[in-house]
Image 1 (tube, helix red, strand yellow):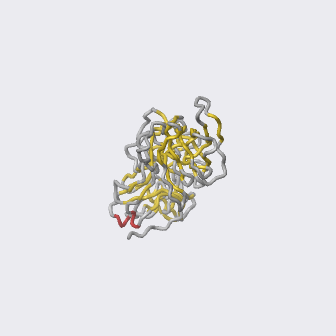
Image 2 (cartoon, one colour; image 1 turned 90 degrees about the vertical axis):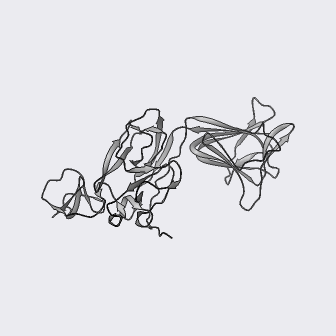
Image 3 (cartoon, helix red, strand yellow; image 1 turned 180 degrees about the horizontal axis):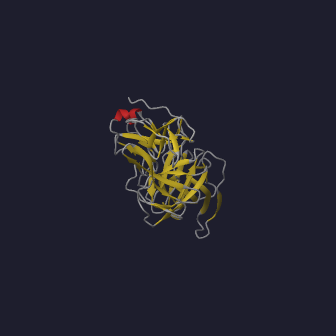
Length: 346
């Protein structure tokens, strides 16, 4: 069994996302009592899940009431709506105001009013901003649900931690870089990892482009765009729209913050493939010898320690880093890296 490297990462949060200010409706008005209820239903990126409270056994079913069709959620049942989206509104049409829903595991009350255009029904509406909302039935009789309408936001909302860096990847969506954010790709030329392309405020981040984001701690909104943008064919960063195993090289790095600061770390021993989260970037590298690869990569640094050191007295033009990838000043003594080259600074 592969031993994992233990690195204290600051989790750089996933985007909370999906298609435009849009809506989708789960309609149970045409359901049949003979049909079985799937535990998971999906429409346009929004997923409805039906489960039971811990330790309970609840099986939702389709039913009829006064010749009308409903999804019946028992009192021990949980109804969850989630997706790669910022959910902003949920409107649930029910049969009876005495049999209502409330937010699960919360005291939040969901308002209940007469449905204006459907006098036989009542409407419960939740509003807010969340990527996951769960409900349970009030009382012991359960609740009869006619339909559920979910409104969600198109743009991607991404939270940057105190590490002031995060990663982002979408295979099929382009975005406008918001104010306060710089997105960078990284390339590997020879033996050196260095910055490749930079996208700043107002630039288009092309679909299929994995990037490292630099920004102050906070929440940023990435607006989707139909513009194509300019891709970077030299980009060594990769990503996936789903949780999957990394591929495409011999050594793999996850982005995070650990003992050496912010950068790319092995997640598995010897840089073996690991499971990456959806919409996050990872680094793919094929070294000359796998045993030469470093377990941590900073930025603009050599990937392997090999070859003679260059001894020079010079005025360095560009940022200066030590072998750990940490930025240092010109008075730092020892081996330094400037513009991808190693120097011995005395």
